[in-house]
Length: 462
Ligand code: TYD
Ligand code: MG
Image (cartoon, rainbow, N blue to C red):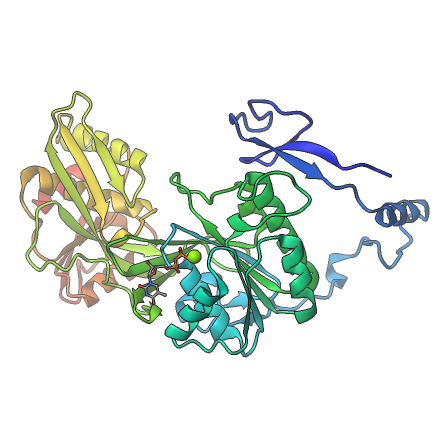
């Protein structure tokens, strides 16, 4: 019979190697290979494939046959509500049967809380199994009771060996399994330590296979490393149907759930929650919660309208510019991309005539939210200028717009919707790309100032 074979698998790209080497031949990353035992296919499976080959694909029942795509029976994915509207929104309208969803986030952000709430809320329609490898059953039950959740239909299992988890799950036939966390699961077929790349990958693979075979939906909880990725192999993200990240600032009670990948819905959709003493409560109209709340206009602050997912959000961008004692002044960005900050400061110097070469520049998006779209460029530079001059922007000003390398201000998608949102919240002045400005130059009470160049924007802002 065929023997199990040892392979060395890259944690970044998933490429197999026959022997260990320092650098991956696939993606050239260093020290990413780890040991992996590959089980031989069972003898029966090998025989049946061989038989079907001999019979010329003659459609044996247990062998996949080539089929005209139009003849394949299919249905709209049946979705089940999680009982939490904001969670449904990020999933693309509810949880799809048999789908595997990875929920990542920093330790303590609220992943276990959110999923326990969801399993409990869904338990009347989808009997759930909560597999806990980090907390004891008593801790999970205690939390459920304290939050007043309907936990009657929820089963729990404190087990980390994936074979035993699936063995226990099978007779119960849950429609939903939560694995909290994927880093604690391990399989008997590998010698590597639990938590290692190969253990995480193989345990996830077992659960994915189980989900597809039985139509059971699976949530995988994953901790995020300092570098911002899910601890474990990148390949996890490719194996699952959806990847959701849970983000927030430790000091803030607001949490944002973001779809990073979703086979059944839009990416970059946001769900907003507030953590309180009764667990996570959804915030269905989050439009203005990410403003700092200070009434007096402050130097170094600019409000922008971002549009993450399918709705606009008002967020405050803050900058602190201060004389640097260093020969290489610092540029630190929290909540947005650091490389983009450096690039925008170069544009500010070259096309705005404002140099910050001898200054430290810190920028932050209030509330622990991340802004990933280029519409942040203009408000960011206005905040930097305002801090440098120590002069607040005019009261009730919002801005958005992409800044190009030659100092041009480019339009961003959904300008009209963003402007309406700002006007609804009582803003009096908007500085926006010409391509986004309405002909009327006003929206309600709000004056809309259209700019084409960075230099114009800097002039009207101060
Ligand atoms: P948890 O869900 O355990 O986080 P994770 O699974 O992502 O590590 O959440 C833990 C934090 O949430 C903890 O610091 C306490 C806080 N919390 C509340 O403030 N209120 C609550 O009702 C609950 C359950 C947790
Ligand atoms: Mg947890």
